Image (tube, rainbow, N blue to C red; front, side, top):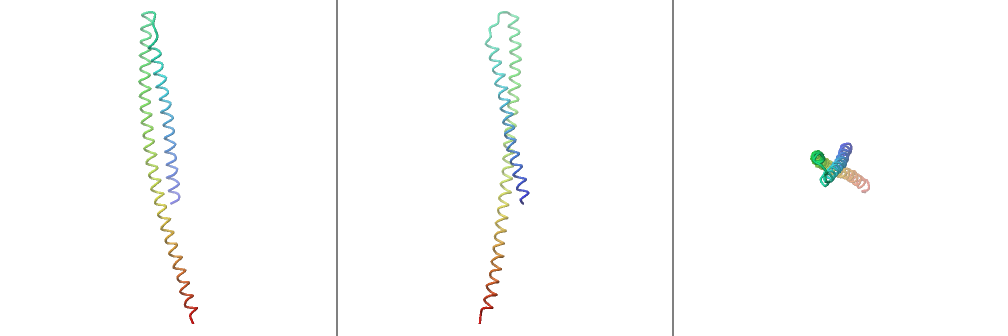
Amino acid sequence: MDTVVRVRALQERIARGGIGRERSAADARRAQVDAAMAAVVDRQGRAVPSAGAFVAQRATLAAGVGALDRARDALAEANLGVERSIAEWTEASRRLEGVERLEARVLDEQRTADAAREQAVLDDLVVTRFGRDRP
């Protein structure tokens, strides 16, 4: 039973670590979205002196918007990863809790059985001694 509890606890810790990894990845994706958004905003506010510069600015802006869309998609995927990790951790935590309760119940039953055996031995000693001490 000890081995099962240790394995379940290890699985729970691994799942908890997965949440941290996924959150870190989501934070990195969020930073990418912020950077892409800042680049798009920066490109929008510039004045252009000529038609050629205007066309180039619009092409650059379109590329920036495309990068922003890809970054947002990556962020949404990373957020799904966080949700999956939380679900895995919740499941692992519940399994650990169930095994711990089972272990506690088994230990209680063992203690009860040990106490009953000890009481039976004491009763035998008392009965035996009572028989010897009688005149």
